[in-house]
Image 1 (cartoon, rainbow, N blue to C red):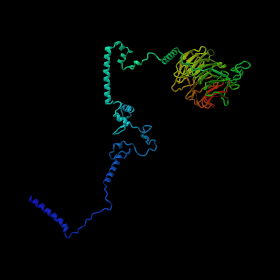
Image 2: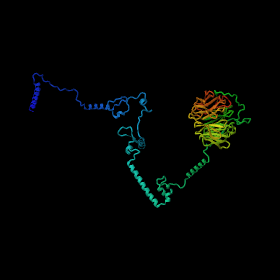
Image 3: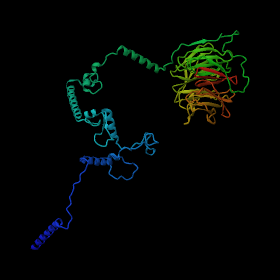
Image 4: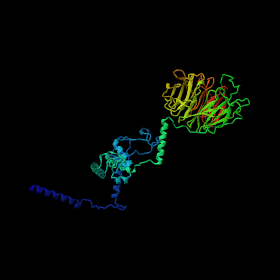
Length: 592
């Protein structure tokens, strides 16, 4: 130990001597003066500055948006950074700035979300009842949207959470109701006759059955009906009785009037003004397409819905107007209106001559069918079922000119006997309003078309369909015409074409014949044939009249006839190159 102590002491003394010798040695350099450096700038406390810069760098790292294209992230991003919307300039070729590849909805990008139907219904119904709901897109914190006052007032309950005080209230109400019922049962069983309890007219029954809709209302029951109630009850009973007896709502009653506009109803020889001229004969069997306008009849104040030439001769033309009037015009001589028939309170839908032209039928939107005398203007008969007639036809057989067929808006074809005024048959198979009736096969059968897009063939007098034509590609056919040879039907289809059906046993569609080019969608434009059957004719929705060649199915000529819809077109029965057209501009035009 002594040796160690000695060694320590000698070591210390040597170090001291060495340090002192550096300063006191004569051989060393002169002592240096140490000058403290000073700055010319004022002293500033930069502690806050350094803290701010450090926070800004950290904040920038944490808040800068992530580049969605990069695959490696050099730091730990926050939740808000990961779910922040894509930032940057809008996409130059996308309306809403979202690239086409990221779009999964026509309005942009929609994220998939998984939510239980019960949870969704709960929040949906809560919002519509209370005005607030949970916000599914909120990440944390207060996640409600809507009426905050209502939220605080209801303590944030949903429609499926009944508050505690409400539960207590319901339990108490149920308990009181059960006690009250027990007490009433005891009173009733003890003091009241059981027969009164069983009688609904007594107070005891009312007290016992308090939950019934009539509870406590005995004093309000009336012993007798008031005068007004009696009157209503009588009218209702009368109406029901009429319906049971088959008397239905009839068409509107209108006073029938007719005005003659000619010089005299009979000529010097005593012939009627409707008598055909004796020299009216067909000069040539060959028909030609008309080229120019010959005459215009204007007298209807609204559109003309149908025209019909006088049968066989065509010296008069009958027109049905939307101004509730029917007019008959002279064709050969003066070209003036000869008589006006006023018997409908609404627009006239269809007209039809009998075989000799002395009588004709009119069908109006006032639900009436009227049978007129052409010469005198008298109404012979009126028919109605309380439904709107869309088409009227007399049986073309000379011995059955008293049989009237009418296609109604209630899907029925009704058959009347004109002489007796009785309904003799009803053909009820269609699923829509009946538009056309066309007799075929020597008038033994007739074809009907309807809004149900089907054709049905009937045996006359038998209300059973013998042929039903309905295909998925078929459209409604509001106009049908029979070819002069009786072997073909031309049907105006609302997909802007005319289809041809055979009238033979199978009533097949002739796929080789199809006439198109005109625009008739939405309009019941009449289709017709020339008397020799060489041409097909139709109006269209743009006021034109179209002519096609029957053999080649090519468009032969178009005439611009009317402003608006050209709804009707009729070929003159004797004059081979003359055609009459009518339109919704209120004019009837005669072409040659």
